[in-house]
Image (tube, rainbow, N blue to C red):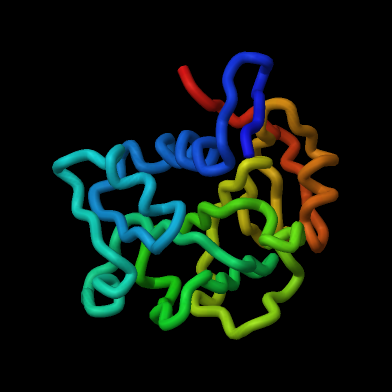
Length: 179
């Protein structure tokens, strides 16, 4: 599926997410990538950075700067359910920041951002930031907080796609894609 943004370019869901993620990884020295969408970042990573898998992180004593995972669900308290069998159990302390890079909807068309997850989370309370094709959502003491909205979308579009309450930041910004 392609989205035409600002009448200029067509992007896939994955391209929107990866393009926005590139801003988050600019100064990261060590990063761990989960399966799925996060793996699409590999060609864009700096050569001098340290890249690990989630399995590597479970064995490392030291934390990494950033962990990026895809999710089947994310709760408003930051619980993350990973989309593959045998995913390792991970703790918040394993990274300075956790980003969920995922399509906003599952294959049934249901939103992945929910009040509480329906299965046991592999990463309880870990999510700090969620990047989807609709926007950038922080996990804060308010729950889900919309910080950026994708071009051609509104905060109402994102609110309708979230399965729980969504606070819209006072200083909401437009998601920047491309140069």
